[in-house]
Image (cartoon, rainbow, N blue to C red; front, top):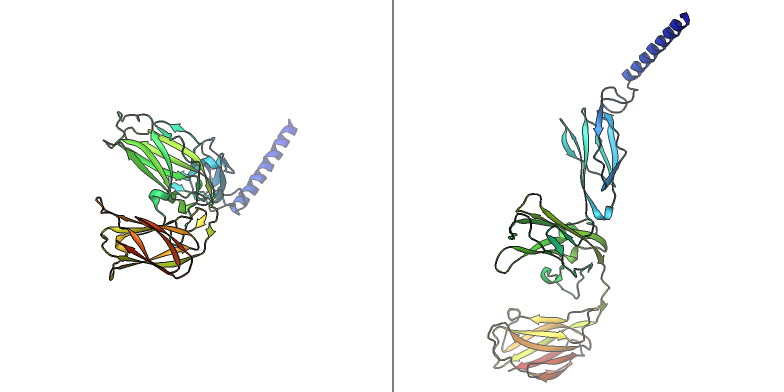
Length: 377
């Protein structure tokens, strides 16, 4: 019995010594961490982790920290090519909700003097053919080529040069009663290094006799692209029923264009002499008959009626010609009831050969800085 009391007394003394030493360490800022940063004393507040997800994983997030401690963790997408990390936030009662900015999946925040919860918003977009009331149109493109100028001064026209992805409304959206008139649509890319969001826009096609949505077209500006692969997502929200949405995704391969063959060219002056020809709304087109789409060269050169003047009965035009190429010369009118197209006759052929036809002809340019003179009648 005495031995037990002696052992108990010794244990009590040892515990008192340990607690005193620990208190001194905390007072000196040498404890497990605390208010004011690591190494201080104070309350250790809890850090609630995000819910477990198949879309992302969170690593390195502690279950608690002291006020002022730097908390660091990582967020990794399970399917990075098919997913988007929308936001990472930390929230507390007094702190409110703060969105964190990460780099290479690493996020950091300073622990406030209260419990906090970390939340991750991410979405998974596997390629699909149909979803809810919307389906990709059969035969959609699987790849797109970066646009390049085909000749000096070539311009990009979105109506003809954009790449397009088409989606059709294949069933009546909920609550619409077959009249799909209220909707919100957006398109975005999961790899903006290849297809930036600024390159995407959505166009709605409606029925002939009403404004019911029939199809949605994602237009892709090919001037903004870089080579690689990227997933394009089209999301259409049904305004007739809250929370009803169709989401389509597809992966596109963006290719760099093959370099175009440089062709020797020069500027050629063509003078038309106008006799009895009707010139209102009359325009000229020169077509390169030897053009191939592998050439850095303009196939058609059109001079409209507001781009030339008749001075002293002459029309002087300047076109860019390729050495040895044949050019068809054609006239036409920009009017609904055009007069007969005037005939072209050779007047002189200094530097070029010309074969006359009733409504135009063929020029072959063989000499630089020559002047071709033709007569209209």
